[in-house]
View 1 (cartoon, rainbow, N blue to C red):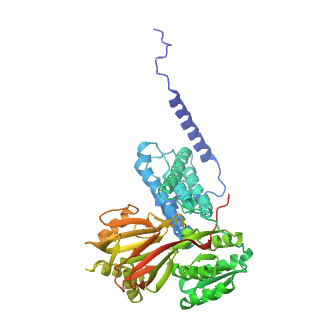
View 2: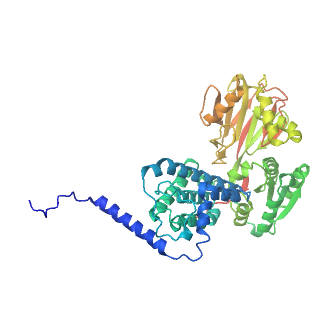
View 3: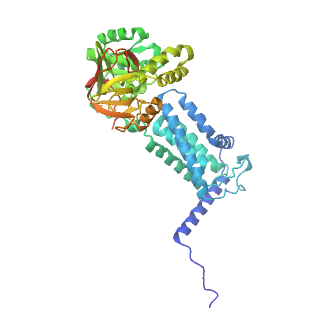
Length: 497
């Protein structure tokens, strides 16, 4: 046999391609190491160290959330959730799957090197994954904040090559994984913009350049000064009336008499009062969220003064449903929720203690006192049977993923009342929790859910508490609820295509 015969096994195409990619990766690392980076030496190593254990991103999330806008808070939360998923994936799968050694530091100038070198494997880059995940998560919720964070995230990823702790492919793979984590979080929890309520039915509302013709009443007890000031800056010709809580109803009536569009800034209770005034006077309503929860405004798609100003100036509006209730001589409407049973009693008990011990402690104490009571707070005839109930909830429109706490409505004109009841029995806390977890399930031993246009309850004891849009009153006798389809016209920003 000739000694010139090659008996080795030829390399496969895939192996050869991988070898070429690794060689290219090493060459790129070498080029980066030999290149002079003006101004980078005092910045990138420090920035790289600041991102250890996610410290930089937690600080960034705190700064974003400090702006105190709902969109910013959601962006910060989504960024941290994306970062957490990316870190878990890197530490449980990425580092264990590919045992790649760190680059040799011979070619990296000493001034660039980190004081403490990482001891984990090189592929993929955890710092790049965390940076990309946080930036992408923030951007999916708030493009403006995402644009602010993106340069910092890119610099952190770049610093890993600059300081010699990662090859370029490690950083690219980590960044891709981080972006994937952000989209995975969005698939599990859609962004508010991605699940915006349908822009229907459209309403013919006047476009008010610079807000001329808008009279907005702001409830000063809701801490609305900053938001009303922001609206005044956005709509300089709008009239802003600041009112004490006891005078809100009267000021709304005065405003409705001279306005082309009635506006309101306050919590859900204040918005409820404004909606009644707008319906009586046949006016469209402009809602600026100014309370704690702001369910109606947020479900409408109005989060701040910019959203409302855009809708008012462009004349974008829709018609929405209103719920109406009656008991004896009492009449009222609700834009969000109506409830009997545990919740109204909890609200009343919390108000009794809040001034003495503070809001959160009062809420905990109220829950303990109400849930430990021996009696059921509500007896009513429901679906033809008289039964004890812990809670009856009716939403103005279908709530999604709500359980017992109001969640989001994706359609404010669906024509139905979303009714949930928690049956009486032992262990009320357990029953309420199981109903919350079950969410939209139609029936269980603990609760039931139906969607109706009208509801009539008899056998309700006079004096039973009822709550509507955060306000609490007492039942006179039997209770009826009905839906008023498309009864209110409101401004809301519509998507532009």
